[in-house]
Length: 319
View 1 (cartoon, rainbow, N blue to C red):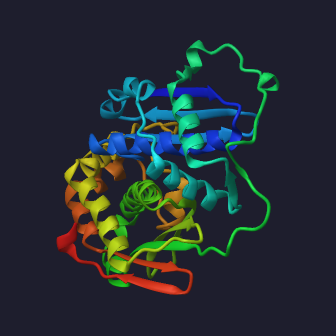
View 2 (view 1 turned 90 degrees about the vertical axis):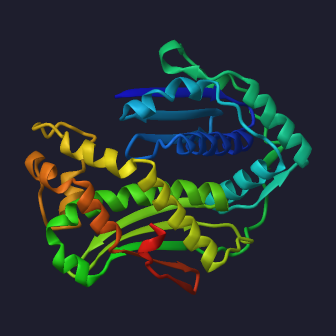
């Protein structure tokens, strides 16, 4: 496994927060276009520290992801009004606070200036003393007042009672499969809709297995049922055709005997969602492409946005 940690100081705290979202969105988009997928090939985490530094951590699990590491240092961003407003919506959804600004042109110019600064890498970094950073609030800042009331978006991926009862032995694999689909759906919807991922829950009650994503949103968010359904179907189809599930099976079948193998599925997480404990021998038997396909055809998706319930009927032809 290879990893990369990037640092970039900035005097504009909330503007840096915008930039962190724009950059991470671009990384995910860049890798997705190369058929490199979150959870299977890599994990990514971006943070904006209040003291005035952007930190991005990237860990590669596969050769496909390792090959992309060098590109992340020089990845150039498209910074315009559209990408800026999308990041604005994400940050507003995350913070649930209203923001003020000194003009779109000023924000975009400052974002481009920040983008022109080179990232500092962990291996070459000495010390960044944030006490030396002279922080400024403008041109993008948290304003006074309260944000208009927002709604949460919940998306449930679930296996129905029939599938759960007939395929009990496949529930540990379903756990990992739903996690991969969920994380990539999370990244895609965040980028496409300007919303913020808030939480995930896996629930098993012997009759059904449900994986829930929760998103925070902004006041003006609007979307149709078909738009949401098509986006989720697109993600699953791309994962399937891009080889993500094939590599997932390879990963699970390659788990060594030692429980110290931290990339493998959490024993607690698998147990809580299946009442089963699986070892290396079990994963070799369960993690096959045929079993993945069988589970994919049993996945249903529902959503709730405020009081609006959205039933995204399962259609196997869309996967």
